[in-house]
Image (cartoon, rainbow, N blue to C red; front, side):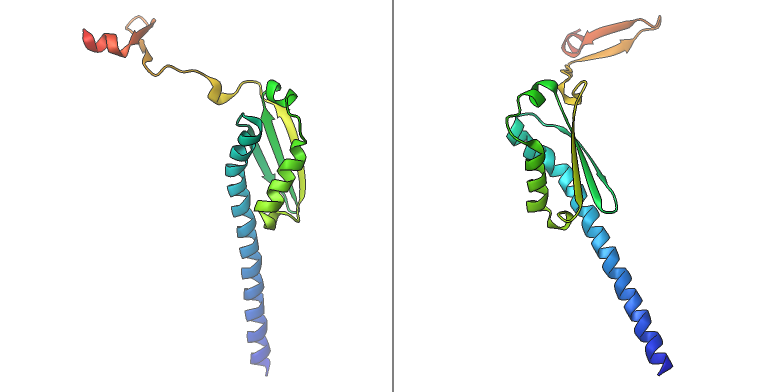
Length: 140
C-alpha cells in the first residue's frame, strides 16, 4: 500500500508540474503573438504603426504604446479601451491578468528615416568621406 501512495503522489506531482508548465507556455506564447499583432491592429485604427512594449508580470500585463505627437493628439476614441478589448477578445488566457496601458510620445520614429539605398559612404585614403552614386560609379 505504501508503494501505491508513493506512485500516486509522484504521478500527481508530475501532472501538476506539467499543467503549470503548459499554462506558463500558453501565457508566454500569447504575449509574444500579441506583441506582433497589436501594432498592425492599431495601425488600422490610427493610420500609424505604433511602437509596442509589452511586459508580463506574475498577475499583470503592462503595455506601452509609443505614438507620434500628431497621432496622439488626433485620437478621437479611448485607446486603452480598444487595446483591453482586443486582448480579451483575441487572447482569452491573458484576460484574467491586470492590464495596465500607458501611452508615450516617440521622439523619432525609427522607420520614418528616408534612407536612399543608391548612395553609400566610402572613406578614401585621407579619411575624408566621399559620397558616390552607384550608377555613376558603374558607368565609369
